[in-house]
Image (cartoon, rainbow, N blue to C red; front, side, top):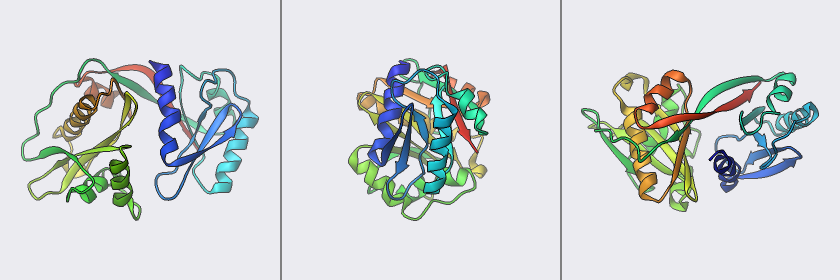
Length: 246
């Protein structure tokens, strides 16, 4: 299962990024607008990673003007953490969770409608903006058009919880590669929290993934409390996702 997830992690950025080879590490560089990517262990590499390789990647990230960031799974690349920390980066641990079974059903919370959002949906822009607002940010220029393009290309599926006025209060995405998909970017506006909206959006994404033939659905929870919420849908922690940043 972790090997399938590793193959997914290597494949999914390639739809919008180029991969630069640094021996035991691969740096993904965003092509055009969008979230900047990160470095990961090269697919299949499980041994030690020299500090020099980490520092070489960090120098390249500084040259490109992108965040000095690394993401990996502790259990599949145990040799990376020591080198990353020795280079001066801080490592954060997050539960990596896989869905067991079909996933639990969640009724739409009172006063909202949860639905999958297509590229031509009038609620697209609001749905794209909601997760940004969840973290006090605003979408970068062209974000909605970029997501619409990914939806049309089949790379991304978007779901959102809308209030009666058609404003998205929560939203998230899943991205499939073959029969594996990751639920990402689920966020709820601060004023709409504690209503179960994020869980309802996640359930809609899971249902959409299953309907499209996805066999393995996974996600990374921000912490143990959030992991317990996802556990209500049938997600179980199987490993530890590590994110390092300056």
